[in-house]
Image (tube, rainbow, N blue to C red; front, side, top):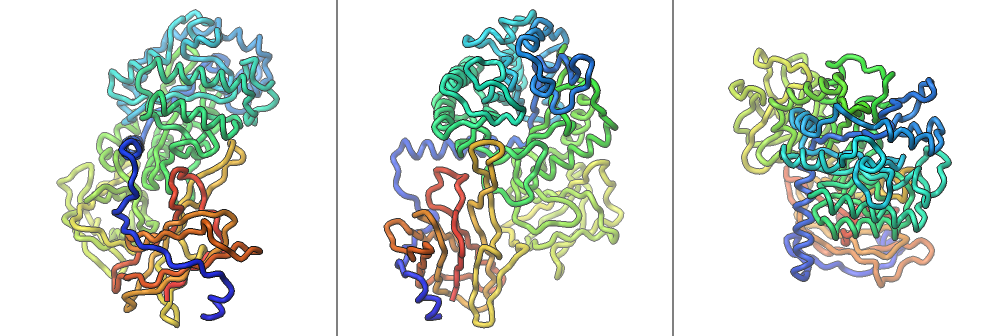
Length: 576
C-alpha cells in the first residue's frame, strides 16, 4: 500500500457534512432554488404531452412540382430547394377552415395528455402568431388572419392543459440570418438574427399567458447567445421550462434525439420527442400509415419505456393544411387514451426506480407503490421481481383492484403468482404492488470485498448517470454527471477511504456515502504536474453491515450547471 500512496500527492483529509445540512444562502437564492425544484417536479409529473407540427409546409404535404419529396416534410423548403419567393406564396393558401383549437385541446385531453406544445415558428420562418417583427405570419400574410398560438393557448387553458411553444433558432426566411445552405440546420446565429430571435421569444412569453415550456431547436448559437435567451425566458416566465436544444448547457431538460430513448441512466429531467412516423413530423399525403392497433401498441410501449426510465414522452400529430387532424392519428390517440383511463395512475407523477432490468417488462414507481408493466408473461405464471425486498401489503390488477394476487419472498426476488387470475391487456397489463416502510433494493451490480477485505470502486464498476452537453445538435454528447456504487459489507463497520483520480480542471467534488457528504477539493491544491493526479483521504467512515447496501455517489459539488460532466479519469476509491 506504500506504493499506492507514494505515487500521488496527498492533498489532505476532507471535511464531513451531513447531507441534510445546507450552505447558507440569501432568502432570494433559497426561493429560486425551491421554485426551480417545484417547477421541474411539476413538469416531470406530466409525463405525456402532445406535440403539433403544423404550418405552411402542411399545404404541399410532402409533394412539390408533382414530385414526392423525401426527408421531413416540415422541411420541404430545404429538401426541395424551393426559392423563398415561391415558398412565401403558400401563405396565400393558408386558410384552415377545419381548424378548431378546442377540438385539438379536447383530443389531447382524451388521449391522457397533460400539455400541448405547438410549432409557433419552424425553420421556414413562418409564424403561427402575430409578430411585430415580420409580416410573414398567420395574421399578416394569410387569409385566415387569426393568431393560432393565441387560439390554442386559450383553448388549452379552458381545458386545464399546460401550453408550450416550439421555436426554431434558425430561420430560412429572415434576411438577417445566414443564407440557407443545407438541412443540417446547425447554422451560426449572426447578431442581427439573434436580436430577432430575442424579440420573438419576448412576444411569445408576453402575449400568450403562462408558457409551460419553450422548445428551442437547431442552430448553433454561441454560449453568450444561449445564455441571453435563457435569461430572457426566466426573467419573463420563471416557471417556463427550457429545452436542452437552446444548447450550451442552458436548458432545464434534455431532449433526446428524434424518436430516441437513452440506453443508459439519466440524472436530469429529460424528454423523448416522438413522431407518429419516423419519416416525418408534419402531415405527408403519401405517408404509409399501417394498422391503427399496431401503432397504438407501439406508442403505449414507447410511453412505458420512457416513463419507467424517468422521462417524459412528447407525441406528435401533424394536421393537414386545412386544419384537419387525420383520422389515423385521432384513432391512435384515442387508443392510447383508453389504456390510460384504466392505467394512468401508473404513469403520471411516477419516477424511475433503481431495480435491475426485468425480463418480463418495466416498472414505474411512487411512494408506497410499484407499478409492474407486463409485456411478456412468464410461462409458469410466476412473476419474479429481481432485486426487491419489501413489506408488501397487497398486489392487484390496476384495471380491476378487486383482482388480488398472492405473493411471497423467494431466494431470487419477490414472486407474484399470476395463475388463473389475470386477463391479459391487449397492449400492456399493469399490476400494483402496495408496500409499507422502506423498500430494500439489491442493485444489479453489487460490490463485495476482495481477498484483502477491501473494496475497490472504479469507473468500470460504477453505475453512471448522464446528461447531454454541446453547442449544437451534432456536437452534443452524453456526459457522466454522477457515478454510483453499491457496496455490501459482511463485517467491516468502518473504513478509511482513499480517493485518487486524474483531472484536467480544478473542481470541488462531493462524495456521498450513505447520505453523508464529504467535500473533495482540488482547488488551490498541488498535483502531479505531468498527469494531474490527486489523492485524498477520508480517515473513518461508518458502513452498513449485513444486508443493508452502502450507497456511494460522486458528483460535482457545484450543481449550477447540472449538465456538466465530472471530467475525471483513472478514478480509484479504495475502502480499506
